[in-house]
Length: 467
Image (cartoon, rainbow, N blue to C red; front, top):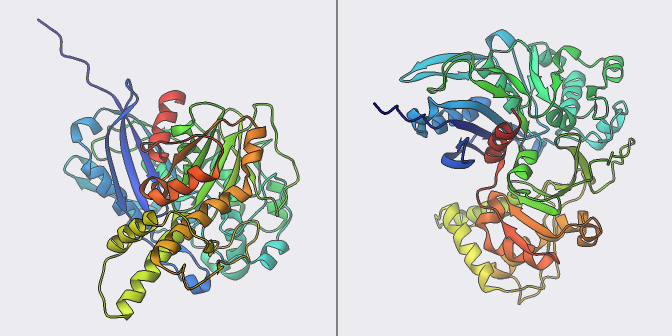
């Protein structure tokens, strides 16, 4: 009598992005994605005029549950590992013992938020330059910027102390998910996320405990740092059919996971344009970043894996600049009495940009400032009567987004570092052909696109290789 075939095993990859949640199932043997779902969170509760950028974690977790519900139950029952990545730098707070409630579903439980704060995102601008300059100098190669977890906690410490007293734990949104899935008493944070919070020394892999304590920082809120690619724990409940006791990796940075999903060779540089934009390549294994941070530097060095660092030009302005342009056009049309969807405007805008091969109009897209210059604003210049069409504006905006990131990490430096190819990734780059054309013009290397490359796929691949 023939034996039954061994069921295929899967790794679940989750990415808690700035505007959407994505889940994928990776065949652990073939390393191929078999199923995926991505949904917008519509979680933004921000007050842009006040520079407060927050999201509702309840809506984000509801979106995660919707994505999970779309995946095949027979495959979820054969998930052997769970990996989670997400938007870096941001922070949310929760009460350790009561931070979620579990609901019984048709095939296992799902959790929902309870006793949590809003998520203060990486885009938050409440920490002014004057405020940041008043903070203690970190023992780290990375400067502290607005939107960084530790800077935000310092802001609450000085402005809303009673708020911090309500909570016992803090972490990123993806740290929260891992903590709830595993039923942990304390948040474990990968060194990738810890470095993105500020006041973390990547040489010792420890928080700046003495500096923070002396400044009155609420030390009980600091997560415990762990190595990227390590296991945080095991699922404490049957979750959407995934068995109890399934290993869960410590949450990782979405940027590092996106790079991992598409960087094939060390001679590759990765251009990722999603909500924001990054250009990066891996430094030699022996490289160590300068110990003293330079707040005016156009590049940063992010911890990757196995002691390797990525040199990163990270712009706050990417697909969000295009989205703002679309929102502006939508609002103008509404004021003129014409109702048209944002998606229709976007598609027509791209078509107009493709019909306009070049433009002498100049757009500086830095409407959100940059971390090395928080005061910079956007600018449209060289305007004439002949270049104010939708096609000119679209072409100039996409050119400006690429030129901005290239100015931070010039092609000559890439050449000198041995880069031979650009790998393009990110939803904004993949779906915008005008943006892709401008990227191909900007670099003296071949540009290849990896449509399946993203953080959800990357974190699943990492767990396949490392846990």
